[in-house]
Length: 416
Length: 224
Image (cartoon, rainbow over all chains, first blue to last red; front, side, top):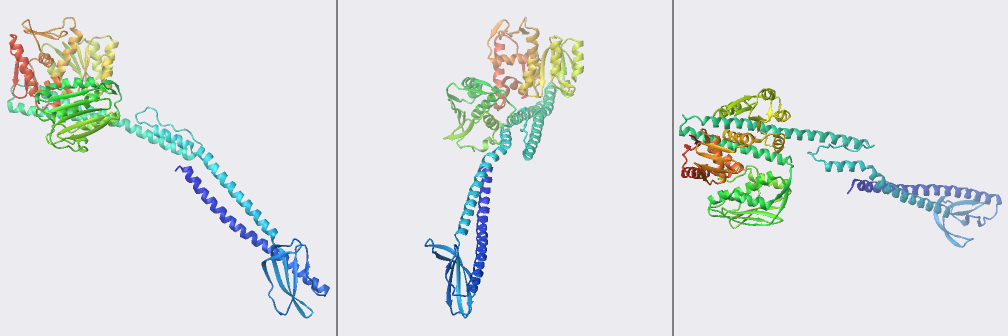
């Protein structure tokens, strides 16, 4: 639910509650005041009636004024508590029952007691309350409508800078040159937000740049000593006095230096991929590249007596030639290295996927672990980065990569 | 051949200089951009080995200087940065080749020779070593005037050996030269042996001498 909806809903409930409670209190207050007024009027009538009786000194007669209705009844009671009460009475002129307010009291005349009851109409007061209720309800409806419209249009407008900021954040790309700008807003909070995001993006971009710099520097710093070791070894082996045992040691050093420089290359490439530093793309005929790869690895395959079966449909992709080369080298290399002597390799390319399948050990590999950094089988010679590179290159281009196992055949399937 | 090595890492510079200083080559060196520009303005060289990351500026400055002065030195960049951008930039502003550190001295020498041949000797593209004569453009090899048919790998290997004649070359260096990035797919260097055996047999069959010596398990030497 959007914030404005939350806000509208909450304010709707609160307004409704306040107005309803207010209306109830209002109703009771008005009717209390109205009743008080009626009672005062009744008291006055009662006094007038008593005075009338005393001055006339005669029998109290039933008299009906315009509104008032007074009834005198002879009673033998000596004491009667004066009381006001709501009642219904027959209005003689119109001959219909009406709600009224009445007072009864005892009037003494000569030696006889009369109970006097005076009733006046309550209709006026009722009408007033009805009118007030209607006005209150209309006010309630009006207020809610205004609230709703305000929230819907005005508040939405108020949130516009926020939405613009959000849009800009979504489009923010760390590698882009343009920085986060943030439209100026009249609202302090949004200005503050934009300011904070701008600072953050600046910091992030700076960190990113220094990371990029680090990648380059690490390459330089690691490669130069490796180059020194290699060239020193190259110079050392020119010495004709070295014996076989010493040369064997040197050979081992060579292969270790070679391994570490390859490892370094792979790590740097991974870092570049993860930071999306490789942007160059060109159109590549994948089927042509695959045919070339088969030729390139022919020697290795022949050595292991492997048979290649392939079915290639023309397929064009847009990618970095360098990365695709690394990707295919790794997949081909694995298919050959982890094959059994006299085994087979199947290569299938169609517009949707590329699969490289090879015969191998009769156990499925762990489809999750094999793509992890530095995960490798016990007899593997590499650093365990090959398939990580493959996975990252696939991710870089939005391709899917999957490992499948089926009766001694291990397959890597790339879906475009 | 006169060579200028511009490299700030002392160990590397010394090894390169001593490795290249044979067969009448004159190899000079300097460790920064400023002395390099001074040397280039004072003397003419055939080849320049250029490191990009120099203490007083990027090596690209040398390339810019050479192109503004219209000097014809062949330039081989040796850089620790394996970045395609740098490679393209270097090649675009006049470098002839780009070698990434770490490299083998044999590889450096072979690349240097290739660059030099392309630049200076393109009129007569025959590379002659005793009775072996190689037509670089036609990619054909004659031994005692008999044409021998070499595979691509054998041909590249022969050129590599001749460029590094008299030097011991490790199997690592040979494998890296011939197979490049796929080298780590090879679990042993047996492949090299097969190719060397074939190359040696073809030269011997055509009446050539046996120049190849095996240096224990480490490598080979192509020598008179």
